[in-house]
Image (cartoon, rainbow, N blue to C red; front, top):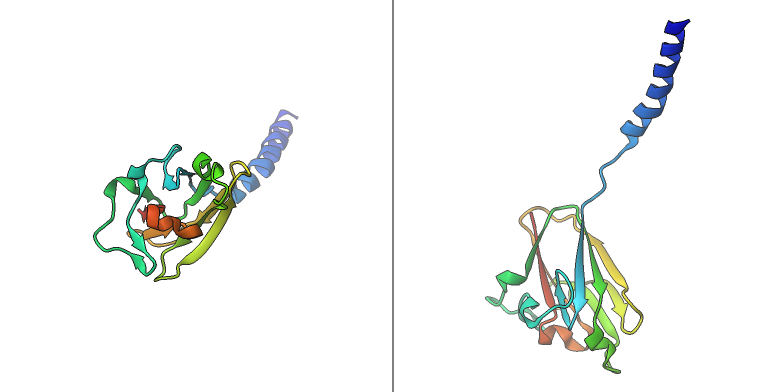
Length: 155
């Protein structure tokens, strides 16, 4: 009788644990960044030193990358930028910010967050291969011309 009982307990445990383990998928890594003071950075408040590169209407200006502003991130990471821009909120003509990944002069829009609506977010999963550098910027009212640029390096 004892053997039957032990067999039943082991069988029940196996039926519960094995499917759960087989179905468990690792969650992608996550990275939180901030949108603050017309900049992108690791954590608010952002400063003038967080401008990643200079940009004009035609694209990035060669040789202006700021190595202190580069953020290393693993491939497959979900990057989330959270709006904490009291400076933009204080200006009636600032509608908020957006994120465009560089792709020539126009870029590729990844999302937008409005001003005066609290800490809204933009999230993007990075699937680019290791060694890729992603430059991004805000197009709203030409904010990129004032240094609202960021840079991610896929590791």
